[in-house]
Image 1: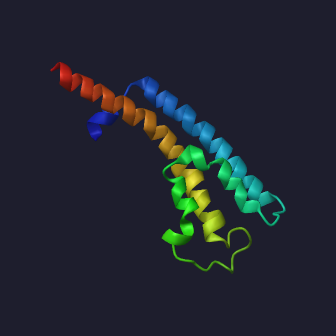
Image 2: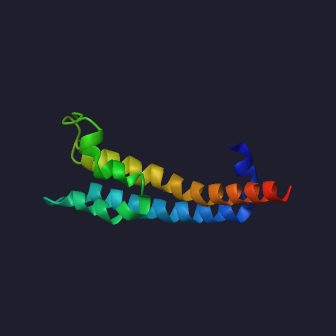
Length: 121
């Protein structure tokens, strides 16, 4: 795995950094808007916007009720008291999503470079 990261080009790292920053800004803009707004009855639907962009990790949010137990955070203020509708989407879309967008071009470029190098040798 270390060879894949060293084989990746600087362009892959730059592309990954730009994609991660764009995703980070958009996702945290949504997260902060959820925190600052007066939530209506269907405020959880905001996560559907990010759902297709963060596959396969967004499936954790979609099927959270089946995967994770119902944890009790009732002492926290809203929306922090809702694990399935706020805390888990914040982790998936605000942290894992940007990491995915950074690592994907780096891993693809590094893998393709090491594979091409092995086929030539």
